[in-house]
Image (tube, rainbow, N blue to C red; front, side, top):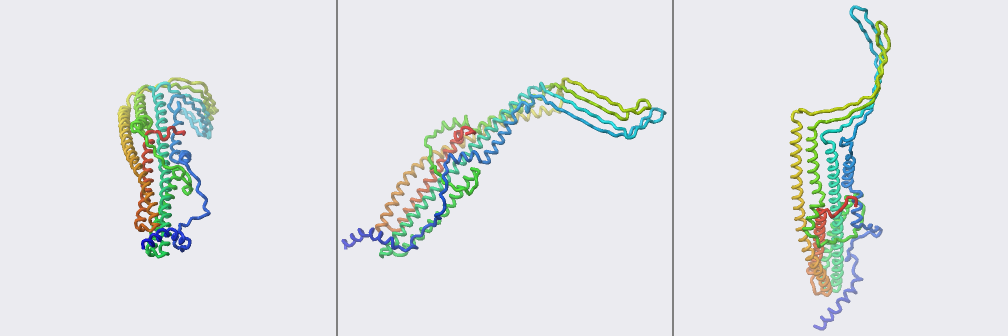
Length: 463
């Protein structure tokens, strides 16, 4: 009896391999894959960021705002340049005139025509307004710098979003491969079980159970393919292109493991665009207050011009004689215009008080922004360090689960393991692979947040 059992277990692998070609077709359910579909084009993270910087609507709108801010920084907009205007007037009149002096007979002119022609060139130039024009120019430059920081912050956030969306596609693609590997193992289980049933070593219920588990894995794969398609649509939207464009990510999730909290905090204080924007907000508020104060000083301006005035009056009486009077005046005029504010109902004092309050609000906003950024930094760094520890643990764990599945599959092939134990080993490996992908993705997210807060993610808007 012992010799027969020994020969049975030795010949069992050969028997199983011999039975596999004769297995019934319905015992090998496969996912249908269209053979005519062309492979999706590859897409690297660098290409994705380049497309996003070119096409993303948020960045394009921010750059238009920056262009407007650049156009506003001129000496003329600050009031430092003179204003030159040309004027032209041409009017025609048809009047009925009746004049009477004392008891004399009235003098009447019906339908008398007259016309007026007036043209001049006038120049006005403010030469002193309490230095308000220079303050206004500095304020325009501060607004331009502030808008540039807004654009830079938009670029930083968009690049971070594109990075997260790209690695989300990588994660979902990895999950899809894990489910496909689970299907491969499930198919092997069906083949082995069917072969054992054919030689009378197992009951048919084991084959049915293996097919049920296989169908469950197929259902999970279909759901995972939907998640992958959704991740690709989200990335395409960020890239400003048609959502249905298919692609294949080529970059893997590689997490940097040497980020230092002190270095990142120092870079945040020096380079973070949100912090720089809040600091420039204080400068703008200070210029607004100085502009209100400058309005208290006298304003002195120069004016000059050259004009021509011609009047043709068809109802002019010389004694009792009706005649047409033509007058023409032309020449140069010039002078000085001065305006001294004396009393305006205390409105300037009210405006200056409000400007001081706005300046204090800007300082409070800077402190609030600093506190928020410090909190985001601490939270991201804690998550970063914890995810690195979990990543090391899961990287070691995935090796164990893969080795466990290989041993379990071989033992099941030899008839030394039950289907339930094999299924449990298979699920353990799938769960471990999904956990590893999730932890790696979360660690990369934390790294991206740290680089965005430090201003290192995109050093220059033009890159």
